[in-house]
Length: 457
Picture (cartoon, rainbow, N blue to C red):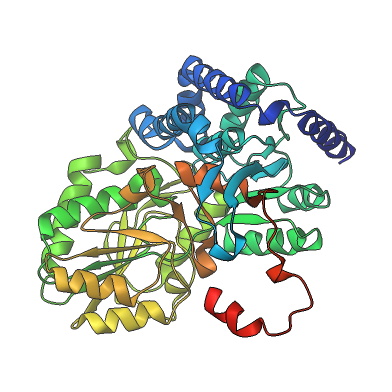
């Protein structure tokens, strides 16, 4: 990994020359990135089809379009975000002014996954550029076609000393070698197990991190939900990218009184969206590789399959599948599924579900379908998750007006919109003191001043 050391050293030198901090330069680089994405839109779409068989609509909606929105927002607001923000000053510091200066970290490392290979590499990059950093990107080795396009775009847009892409060969071993170097910030999206490795390595250099992980995101349908609408939105969210989404509904809790009705509606919407045989649909993606395929198929051995269950290893195809009669001790209920398999459990009282969710590691998302506002607030206030939706799935990720991130085992830190700029910025607090007056009260000796100090503070 001598090449990494060489690139990193050059990037650090480039950063200290000051160019990445210049706001006009940042905005110009963001515009350059946007224009390159627009030019290569067809290449990105083709690559996502090759890697995951994503349709052009899904590729734009979940990857290209979201990235362009992030970049547009950053272009519009980077100048404002970069300005020092004036704050109130305590009275005891009379004739002073307080400010928070957003300061870039320096050289940041972005490690992106294979499931949304374009979005999850370039959206963080936009935040890093807006904040004034240099960046190194390590894309996934599994989404080779998309990684190649990312390399092309970055090489077209930027000097290597400013933004570079590390060739996506090697998995954890390659990441481990990269992490031997000292970066100023690390942004990682991927599994919790790799996230722990990232955090351990970062600790050696006291490098701050953002970890966007995953987990088992519950989807809860209560007895007073709009069952038809719930089924449609659940099918869409679960089968987006064939379930290979970190915020996909992972398992389904349904009130016993509406269970059969919901199952029938889910069957109906699977067929409406993907036809009688989803294998023939050009809208239905594939599993990324045989390793993930074999892991997913192993989940079909426990419980009762009531919808789907078909698969084809050669095509990396797994039919949308619902498994009933699952035990909380089954692997499908212990491990993040990351595929089109949906274990189903029923409940009588919502407290049962709240207790179940709270007994597990904190999920990245939680979805609750109910028309009762009191029940909605009860679930929100008594559970913890990175984010989520009421009466929908996934869509909170697509809003740059709210931050996105995990909590506990599902990650730490957040990004999207202004939060991306903040993530890649150190907020430096500064007090500017006047020289016109210097009250001796704070200087020793302190005899007979304690009571006055207490009144002032």
